[in-house]
Length: 22
Image (cartoon, rainbow, N blue to C red; front, side, top):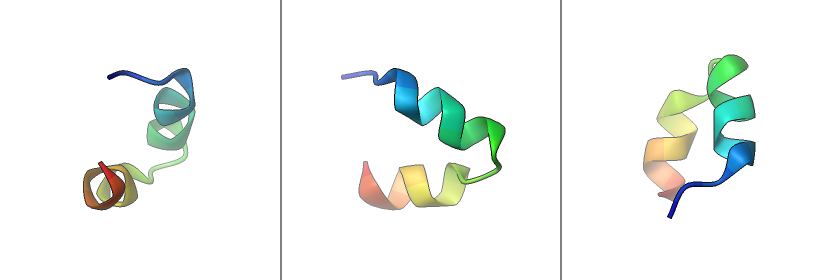
């Protein structure tokens, strides 16, 4: 399930966090 917030986090360079949290 995609969340717009994830796109924002990716922009901030938090991709590793996104992968860890799903």
